Length: 431
Image (cartoon, rainbow, N blue to C red; front, top):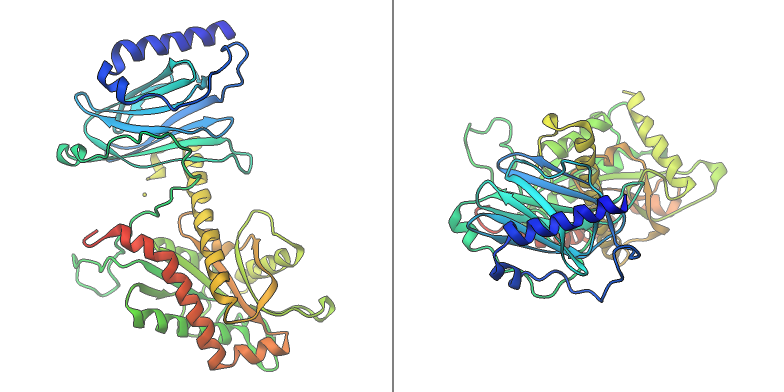
């Protein structure tokens, strides 16, 4: 096995030196700096176990499975068109035949280019730019992954591609810049072909509705309290004019949980906020304050799990086309998207907590996670906010107070502004 690996490394080195890059290219694309390494036979180098391409001639994604995170640098080259990825020395244990092309990539090859440095070279079908590149940490039984996303461009746009960075660094697990705003479909009744306004879409989801009252206390129903809060938040956001705001319900209507998430997905929403107001059974004592939930496969505590189970039972009352992908590739693409989306969801949850704690009372453990089905859109950052406990007298007084509602809505609007400001700046006019 060791002999076969050494042969593969030497073959990769020969291919890269002989055909991949002119000498001038090699000089300006040195592999990532690293301390001197022990011999191949004894070094504990990162191991690459699988590589795959997905997508088409417009957008293509490369995914490399690794046993640990690595640093990397990328660059694009012309005549012929190539993408080069420099990484610290990697032990490539990829299946025979790995390197076949797809989409924007004719083929790719890999190997050792110097002691301590490896390289992956992609031969392209034409000019393309790197729209995103990042390393995902190992999580939830999935390996660490190096991800590279390519998009077709014309030669003029390719010529404007920035030069490679001179200092190697480990990219963040999730790209620092959120994706640009995607224009939303025209609203029902609008003229065919009319351009959308391009603003980020914020979906507000007042929980329950119709025959599902939610929790009730002292004559107040959760469905009515959260609808009033959701409408107030909508009005505040629409007044600012920065976003297109969509309600999953704006009256006393029951909406199935899955349909609520579909609203956000169908509109390519930038953010989904579900509003609820919990109550604890008398036997479980008293609790107060607002709580912000993000999605988790495992609830962060027993109370969160109980709440998620209760909300999920409510239904009993009433950018890559994965269809053409092999099942294993589709599963990986979905996993990558979900992991990125959860990171953005957690980022917004922390921003929201920071804003709300200065204006409203928060639960003693304000950030939690649970398996809410309404939060499971894999590509839309989502949170569920329990704005208070209707079972707590003090919280209930706040929930029915317009003054309290105005302060809480203001802090939530500020968190939304902070979260989406960078996305709007990145999108720019006309995008």
